[in-house]
Image 1 (cartoon, rainbow, N blue to C red):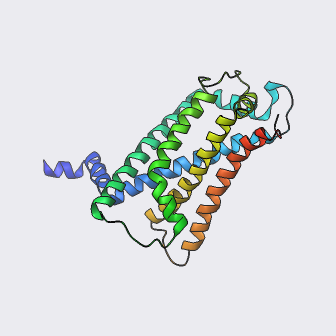
Image 2 (spheres, one colour; image 1 turned 120 degrees about the vertical axis):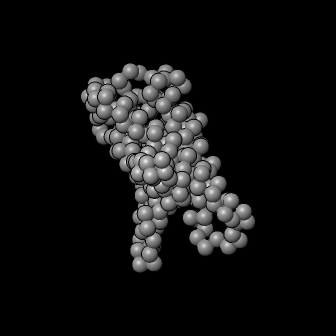
Image 3 (cartoon, rainbow, N blue to C red; image 1 turned 90 degrees about the vertical axis):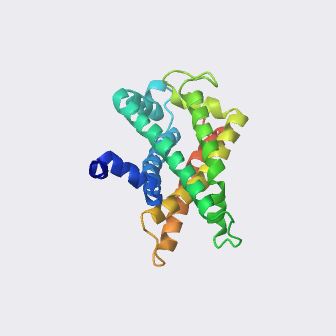
Length: 232
């Protein structure tokens, strides 16, 4: 019985996950998936800056959205993968945090890296806020439950939504949190997979910071441009 248990792939997977390294690997793998989605989503969103045609069916961002929805099976497969990744990412994060607190109930007094430390301290509450924003974002631009939307006209829906200052400010706030979350998350992912060495640690930190700022500025620029009247 014990031999079967040790050779069963399911039991080995569970045993691996129960270890701290297993949770860190899950965080890293799901993090890569979510980072990939963030970049893809940003590239799609930035198409709103392409020259407007004035005809909804020929607007670049609308064509892109129509292409995605024309492949419904692949779209739902990606959505399912993202949902599973989010659940696993959050679960592993909470469990690692609890294990860390159990191992060291008294926090460190000195913080060697203030930006990194601040980002780390905000992970537990920035994550749920970002998750709440994602739900709001779906209700806003996918289902039309927050504001009326025009079917097939993503460009008009985005502009119409961000013309409401409250919506735009909430979006900007969520993207600022996402910037900190991405910075610490990406840096932690490098450490989890063993990429932690004095020779290339500074370069990895810079990469994590540049990546996080690129995503945040790219996304924040859209509501800012709408409020400023640069996109109509």
